[in-house]
Image (cartoon, rainbow over all chains, first blue to last red; front, side, top):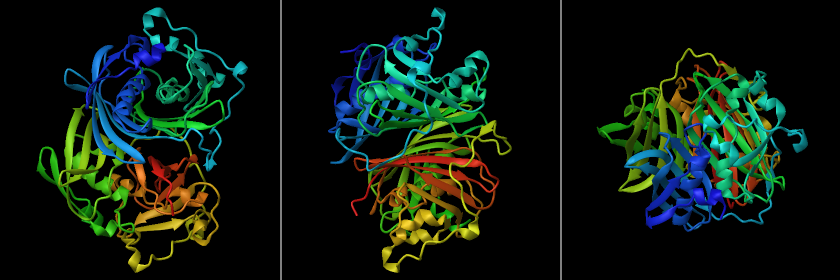
Length: 264
Length: 264
């Protein structure tokens, strides 16, 4: 069991309740990474489902939970032959932190696409990509040590005062501790990039309000490619879309989040 | 009050319960149009919120309700100064039909975009566009009479056996009864196109499993432009993205749904 598998464990208490322990290793400067929290919720939902895979997850981020023990409460809404639907809530002391709708199904690992588009933006070879500088220890950016991200250089130009002028962020991704990607790693991956709005000139803490992601195929072993973009920054809101492609060239996940532009 | 406003009315029973009456005029061959159902749920949620606009809506389509009386049950999860978050459920006789997460906020009608992309595909002038043939009366496609859609011709080539070979659907849209677009009309608009998978060679009833849409700006009066596409058709699932642009050239809504490919 990897550290990630352990940190996302959901231990069944009864038919509708799971105990989890939120791990400070996924802190992004205080709050915990949203994808990490979703992976934890999804462990509980999939355990309670007759199906094997979380094909669709929508989440509202109500409050940012501190590390420590918490619970996932699951309500099954429909258990169909093709798909099951649940709602699940991350709670602590009766206070909801994340509210989700999850559809589970069992994907066919051998399925060949009937039709597939190509990645929405090109990526340079990985040896032309760059890592972020190590965060300052006092920043509490523990998340950065859990993953490896190799960035398409222009999309982190904002770090040195040269944003590209449009919302975008692209990187190769894998877990720092060797682990083949699975749906829970993908939940982490869709929220692992710095906010795309940084490349458009935005700054500061950009809280996610809503994030929906769909698992489109089971990922092959190896690096993942994350292609992040956005369509509109307006009235304090921005959208961020992330496509995840696996090492076999398959679209394995797609997400969109609506978030607030930071005041930083 | 237009017929659409009336058909989506939600009458407050108490703090958490609204009466609605689902109108057969929005039937798409038996089931009711999903966007119509969402508009009805959103009336209840916005009425119960301190904010004016439904900025983010995620919905799971559990079962297809028949026309007639139903209820919307709303639970407020957080009422913040910038945004409020609720879950809401369309129920009849205790059975849930649609489960939603809705974030409300108050958008600034005068906001100028900080950054905006352009439409993801070009549209011909409206006089180069075409209408769908009238549905057969026995088809119960009553929805078609409620809206005007002028299609980019290749994207309905599937009707005459000439699909373009990729998931796409594009049209100009307005309500058949004169009405300026508002957020509820946009809820209808994001689910008003024929399934994009028809252009990729799919056929038959394509049930929506999950649909998330974001209201990005308040629409100007006039025609809307709907740009629909998709990224992957695989393992019986497809995604459909719809962008809605208003007559002033603004991106006003963006949606993605995950749906099943029909067996037709």
